[in-house]
Image (cartoon, rainbow, N blue to C red; front, top):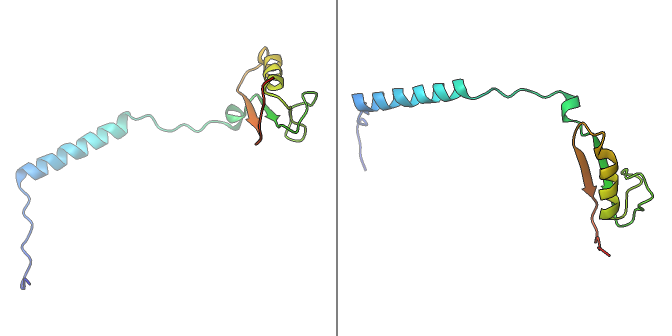
Length: 101
């Protein structure tokens, strides 16, 4: 076990130069990295959202309360919307088994 005063840490010129270069690189990286620009709520909002559930019906509107039943029904609904779309169309698949016939 050592006793007495701890030895002081000596920084050589090389260590100070390395630290200065590292600080400069960090500052330059921060300067050229684009700032995060918050998007408006309307830019984040999707154009349409469709819901599909094995318990739904393709005669439904595709809402959360009245989901479509098949993937083909969702495809057809997306095709019907895509001509006038000005944003994303999101299709949510509820849990279950979707069988292709």
